[in-house]
Length: 164
Image 1 (spheres, rainbow, N blue to C red):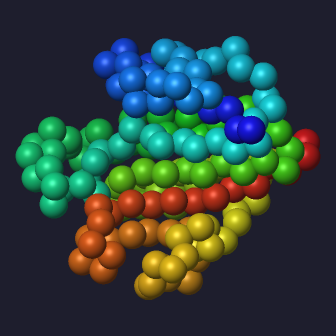
Image 2 (cartoon, rainbow, N blue to C red; image 1 turned 90 degrees about the vertical axis):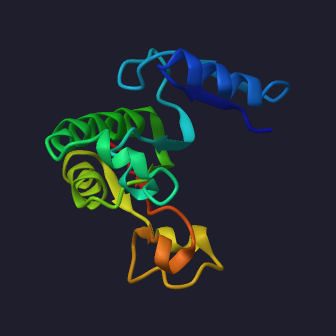
Image 3 (cartoon, rainbow, N blue to C red; image 1 turned 180 degrees about the horizontal axis):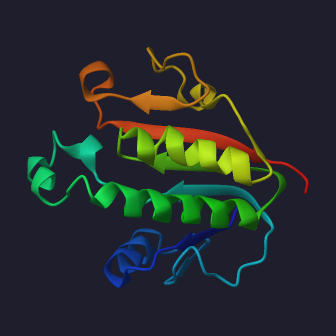
């Protein structure tokens, strides 16, 4: 069977994960995902990164006042670091899914393009994970939009870890 290891540095959120997964084969580690002592042997890794939250404005319009344009570079740096750490923890042949609720290019395709340049990964066609959702674009990534999909604006990119 599957076993899940969740990494969440914020104590309140880590407690929520632990509470919601009680009784399941889940370990919750309260650590920074960039600095774990985990072995690089994961088959699948989901990286749901902290972001500007711009994709959730229809549900949380007040979020527009919590972020400034100057926040984006620091968040994109953190996102690149978290994605790089996740790739390092994934075994060759394994898959990393990068996800964010921001539509900002610096937080989406910019982070993934950096990973493709710096790490032994290749992009997978992420659209197949979202079937039967329509209007997913030309791929290989998925960008969901409130006006088109009835969801928050969310981005996802699947990357396969290569040997090396």
